[in-house]
Amino acid sequence: MWKSEQGHTVHELLIAMAIFSVVSAQAYNAFLSSSQRLVLQNEIVEMQTDTQAAMDFMVRELRLAFGAPTITMTVTTDDTITFDRLEDAGYSSGGNTTTTLHDTKKTWSSSSFTTSYTVRIISGPGAGQARSISANTSTQLTVASAWGTPPDSSSFYVITRKKAFTRTSTSDNVLRYTAGGSVNQPLADLITSHTFSQPDAHTIGITLTAQTRNVDPHTGQKRQYTLTETVLRRN
Image (cartoon, rainbow, N blue to C red):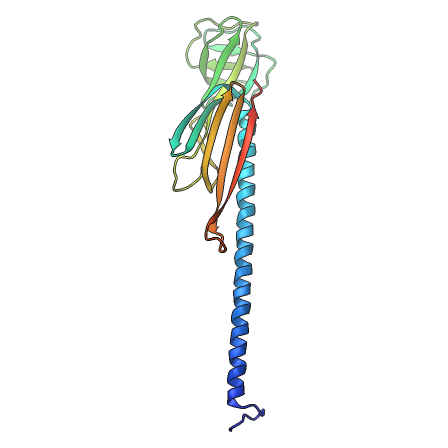
């Protein structure tokens, strides 16, 4: 039988090449499987981190919800929660006109309450009234429509802003945060469902379910992660 210059037969070389191919294929498969596991683990960490961050933000915001939030269904199995977030509060210092409220104890930034903010009189003269804020200085609020009864120095007020958490499409799976109609930003993607509940006047329940971008190669299914929190409102 013909031999190569190194003393190996062609048959031996073919066997060696076949063994090498098998070993290489096994090594590649092991590497591919390890890479897929690493990608999946990174996706799981990303999913859990983003979902937890979104949940923490919602809890902080909803703790300051003023009055009763409104829960409506917008996407199958998903809710929108709309609420007035408490931004500031205090007693008027008096000297108000039919379109102003003064509080000399404040140091507001000028024009900081001009986008969808509302001032509400909670107690004292003018109680029960709510007016949109059209302008403000460091110590004065100007309302868009005149007070029926102007508040005085014994009137307690709060400033609120309309906000919401919602997922408006099942195709993008993005949980969104809106404020005053002018701010609309994503909080977390990969959110496949979310629900809000209000078992009593001071409690809000939140449940978020997220999933990985890709399927687990071992199960053929996407991994899911569910978080549940109970918010105790401060007011």
